[in-house]
Length: 367
Image 1 (spheres, one colour):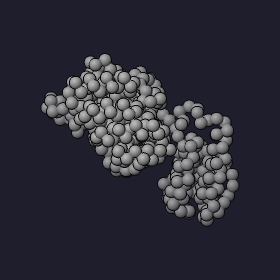
Image 2 (cartoon, rainbow, N blue to C red):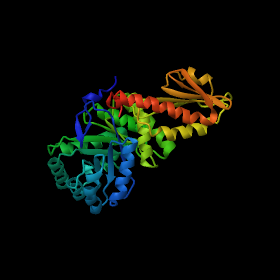
Image 3 (tube, rainbow, N blue to C red):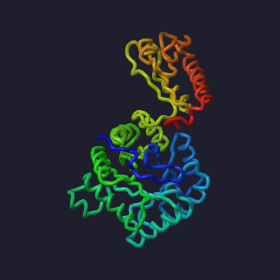
Image 4 (tube, rainbow, N blue to C red):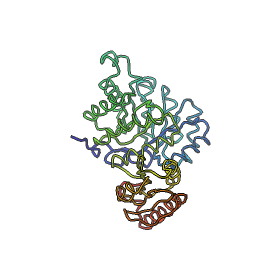
């Protein structure tokens, strides 16, 4: 039986609602040196344009924590401070505008340190994400469970949450990560059966663009389809903008949210008589600027054109030296191959303008 996402607790990161049936939120993490506020803000701007809704920044030292004052004052997104081992850094980040904290209460420095962080979070009204990671579980849990099993990950997360609960703090979000897709899925399922905190989904250390996208799509996608997950990050060894792009493709594929253009294209075959792959790559760059939730088809021949892609808002289908532009299955015009992309974008802009005129930007689960 699917989980009910609306039953998780509601928290807010800045003005962004998390849990309690709110839309699943896309998150990423900056790769800049947080101490360089200008570079960090420039990357946050790029992430925001790509569709990131909450961003996390590493805080390795006091200089980085103090930089939060400048970063949070100008950031278009709520900024989460990622802290390890040092309660003073967590407090400093919150005092300088962090909208949330990501900590491990078990390694922050003992009971007094946890209490200090919680008091700062209470004072400034910021939530805390506690994270259990298969690569950094307490030794007693590893021994008790015979390794970093899903049960060990869950027990670690529950232990961390209870440290905060014992101090009267309940504005908590939880992540349970493993580089194993199957262990990640099992851990989230097990935790959700025992606790109702909002969940941040991710497969940790997933790898580069291709492997990381596959692993994250399987792990995160399986959980989303079961009704689990309130925020997500697709962790990639790549430009963090790509994390955001993959995340939105994933949400769209799961039928949860939609942003920008969904491109459908054929895999090519012996019937293809145009240079479809470079045409698709060029179209992807042009269509990345479109915010309307459209479906655009890039098809290699008339067999896969207006027929199989009849549901597309706009599309093109190639032939020998020429092609057709179609909308909702109806051919609009025939053009030379060299003019296909320009003609497609002309038609897309018409549909985008109509979408904007109808006020669709704020409807449903689009963004």
